[in-house]
Each structure stands twice: as structure tokens, then as C-alpha cells.
Length: 71
Image (cartoon, rainbow, N blue to C red; front, top):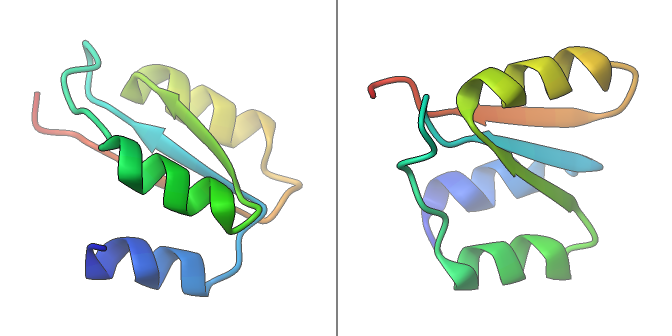
């Protein structure tokens, strides 16, 4: 498991939002999705624009948002 994923999970968020770039080109490996969900964390995967909107809507929750910005 990537150290970054473990670092994010160690913060014990209720929700992790992942922004997968403008056109959704970044892919999340199935084993990463499964691991996050096995930790009782809701995983939301959207384009970066939609991920930002979701983050702003859900700001009352304990969330972590990770954004892919390079494409």
C-alpha cells in the first residue's frame, strides 16, 4: 500500500474524495479502493472539478480531499 494512502487513512476521515483530473484520466487501483473501504471510509471518486464541489458541499464532515491537478 502506498505510504500516502496509509497517511491519509491514519487521519481517520469519514470520507475520502479523490479528484481524478479534468477528464478523469487518473485511475485508482482496485486494491486501493478495497483497502480504503475496508477501513469503513466512504470513498468518492470524481473528476477534480466535481471533487472540489463535493468537498465544498460536505465540509461539515471529517473529509480528506486528494486532487490530481496536472492534466
